[in-house]
Length: 150
Image (cartoon, rainbow, N blue to C red; front, side):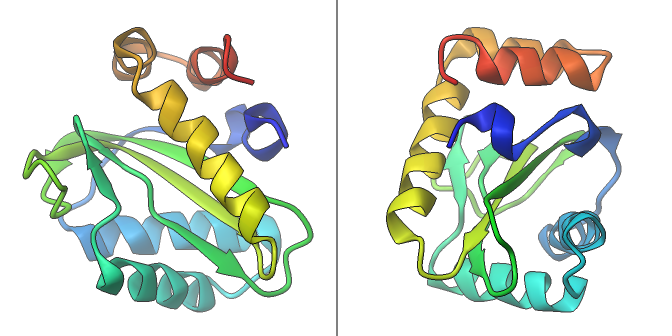
């Protein structure tokens, strides 16, 4: 599975206002639930359960909340750029301004890990991060995420 197969411009949200980690998790769960026809509460609960194991704030202002979800047929991703960074309890204790949600079908552990690795690899690039943080259109973010890593 390629990044471009899991996330398109319709799943990129720019300059979203959120006041807390739970509020941004509710936002992404709501957007994903609408797209996938899955209860946003089910997605939110899965994300909260994953966060209870340890923050998905991976550093450099990035969080990658992820979960395996019953009832979806293929991986799904969306990206949010926050209007103001927030505390996500990230590993480096820095505030987070880029949220990348990844959902995969239950039982597809290897696919889940491969997709996480692809996103993480792209997000480690300062060039990609600069593009995400400066883009005025969702298409530019998708281009940055799929150049050389898709």
